[in-house]
Length: 270
Picture 1 (spheres, rainbow, N blue to C red):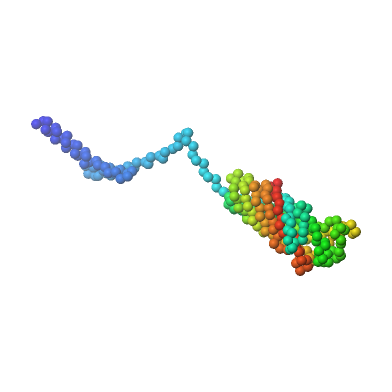
Picture 2 (picture 1 turned 180 degrees about the vertical axis):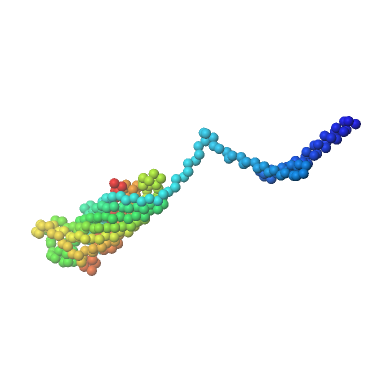
């Protein structure tokens, strides 16, 4: 009998304890209800989220990708080119090996992205066209020289001009290297150029008359326009081509013009 009473009392205590304190878990929150004699108390416990896995000491984190920051630069440049002869009926014949162009000035680039830039140049340009038969052409002899010379009397005939030029271009980098800002990537420039020609003349050296210069502001145009292209292997040097699409000589006065294409090398970043 005593054993039955003991078992009954133990069962009753366990049941009361289970009813007096119960809990419910929702996600990381746990609700626990404890019942006292008069009141019920609700306690809420929140479990902290586990710390994200930290890298071990030997594990290396990937480096963040560098971000491009726009910048600009200005360099002095110099270049030299050869005038490509054209033996067509529209042009006076020039000697390619002795006809050349020299440029010197400043180039400015505004880097907008890692592969694209816009820029411009301000420069002085000198052109020397070694002519072969201009002085013997009747219209040139009449309008510019004012007299005829026999071919055997002519030692040298050239046309020279001193230009002040400005250009604007867009630059596309084919292999950008802007992370170190060394401007050493390969690029292509495409642009236009305008030339003002304040000093231009034809010089004739003959056995009978010696050296003489002939100026004619009406026959020799004072403004020229060209398209330019550069292929640069770094900002230190590039290959350029310049094609003049306006006439160097006034077509109302002279029937032929000077060859328009110049190809050369440009050095910069000095």
